[in-house]
Length: 254
Image (tube, rainbow, N blue to C red; front, side):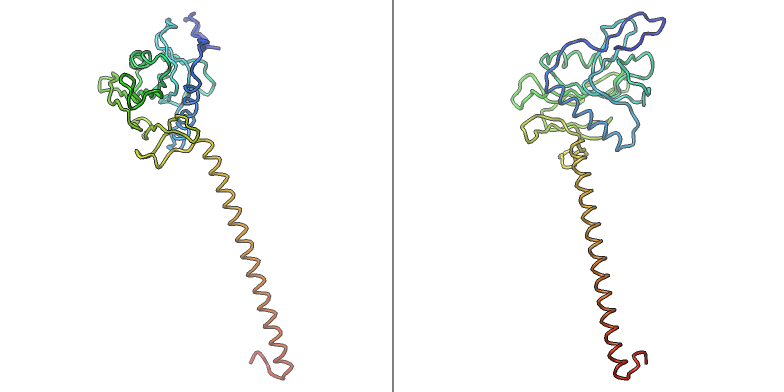
């Protein structure tokens, strides 16, 4: 279930570690990944993205790995499905990554930036869904970007609602849905008034557009039928008037 090892590499690189994660973490990752995919497609950026897959960056060492909750490669990547990514087999380090903080927040706060820096990640966003305005240690957002020397540098720490992603060219915004659940949405503006549509929202919008199109087509059909009826009525009225004139000995064409 992991990547197939080449002949000169007999080390096994597992694709699973059989460790569970919090349901909220999984839900956030999947929803955010789908939004990232949609956003990249709308930008016409043919890049590979995914979630919760292991990246190995040290050949021969299966412990040197990270599994981003959401990632984007700066390449299209191979056509086949991948069990794991090995950075030495191609330009397969995540250019952009999101870590959603779980129970062991220190691991995500302290260890994740080091691992992503080692892989050459250009932008890392750490989101802590458990952080509040009153948190003394935990923080909602941490943003790291690669400097001129290629090293990741923390450029923003915030408990605010949103942070900017240079790689995605949009905002990542914490939201609360109608059910009271925490979520992360992509937004084209800082205020969150122009959100990237979710799959469900897109389906609803397409359904509404189709319904509006059907209504317009029905209105157009009814208008055409009404005009045809009015035209026939006018023609019949004109024919009757001509008949009366002819009966009276008057040439209607003179």
